[in-house]
Length: 222
Image (tube, rainbow, N blue to C red):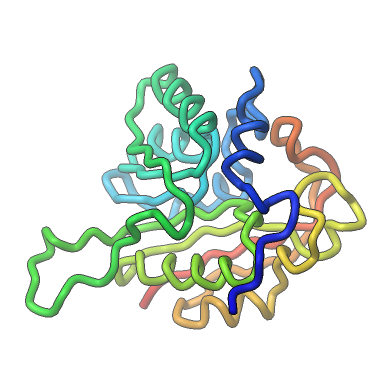
């Protein structure tokens, strides 16, 4: 039996539409620092998927770097802001309203199929997708790995359990947070190029602000 989602994520669409429905950008309009530091793993023209990209700050920034970006999020209020941000910055981002289970994740192409039928991505960005309870997280991580082409990179950032002491962002449930052993096990199919557990001051809108307990991963699919 799947574990039930815990509050405040029992109704994620309502939760995020309420947060993103305000005038400001909840997490700001600049990219996540870990993503910006490691986006060099992708080159212009490659396809990148942004998971639960909210108001578009990361997807739009990647599109500005010449990447072909698709992003999904459950909240239409966030997607509306992402469309506006993309228009303001003169880039295109493919935006899809979906949750993790509804999104049309690509799988490996069938044997003998042409490369044109391979919908997989050269990269996946998964930045603070910690609304996911353990059962949903396991499904999401598995789909992320399948969605990568051989040679494709995952760039992921999240909070560790020490974040419960700082309370400067992220969920209040410890089972939503990441540890190094959890990520190594979840992404055992990838070559882990970087895995760093660290603390930093962050300022991402009003949603993430202050001293934070962070973990970042960069993995490459063999």
